[in-house]
Length: 192
Image (cartoon, rainbow, N blue to C red; front, side, top):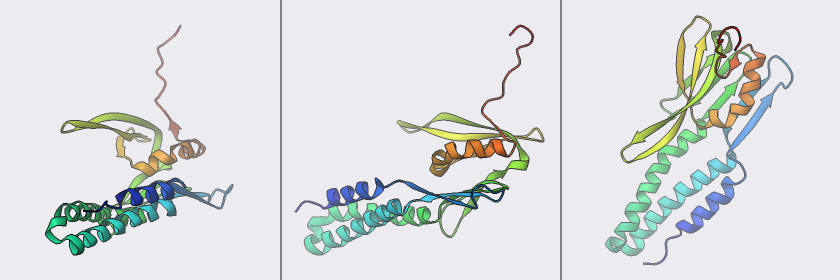
């Protein structure tokens, strides 16, 4: 069997993705109605679509050219194409919006969009935490926000990649709306 063009697809994805993962749009800058919107950049979305279509084309090519001898290439390419067909539609609609009311994002499958976030008026303080999550033999670091409400409640907000990328822009915005960011100072009493 001839060499698979995955290395060419990977090179194209890296080249397209190098232009930046997210794009930031600011509407009405400097006014109370200023809105910050983050979404996956056109280059990132194009790379994801190109990889998915390339994997699907490779699967079809392997089946037509090699028949049963190309079953391994067909399976691998088919799996990549199926994963891409699930991931790409999610990426196309993901958005994080910080406006005059609060911060929220829209994520998920096109037929099952979900919104998570908070209103500034409901939150007194926000903190970012990390924890190690184990999955079988591997583990990863998961970031999440703890929101301390003005009513004394505490909420854990599972955040995604767009939140991580927007964090530096969100901190000053939170402060401008009266939401403290970071762990609360502990008063150790006199002489501390």
